[in-house]
Amino acid sequence: MPFPQLTVYRHDRRHRALITLAGEIDLESAPLVRAALARCLGDGIRTIGVDLTPVTFCDCSGLNAFLHAAQKTAEAGGALRLHHPPPMLGLILDLTDSGFLLLGVPLGHLSLPLEGVPAPAAQAPPHRPVPLASVLSGDAR
Figure (cartoon, helix red, strand yellow):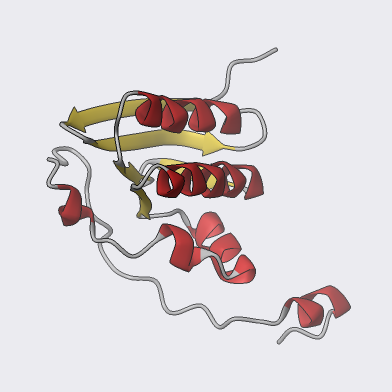
């Protein structure tokens, strides 16, 4: 079995953590994401920021891992937020209308240094939501 092509970096400050993921998040590597986020909760971390700037790909397996971790974190009285999601994950968040669960708190809220992690240069144009029924029927324009 090949090793997942994903690297996890964690920077803690008291009861907060910044997790930086680098590489691809898919069916093979999603368990690594789940384990890293669960370990934060096990260590008493209640505010978790996930920097996805270096992520090159993320499919619905990654979304599922993030939603599961966000639910567990909320149950523990904390919050999990994603920052700088890659375009594929942004599209999945739009299609599933789940962005409000994972996005929203500015990265500065965590008060953690981000040396070496560049912010996006420019915002992509807003995505025009297309109803899923239209996509499935081929009527999307």
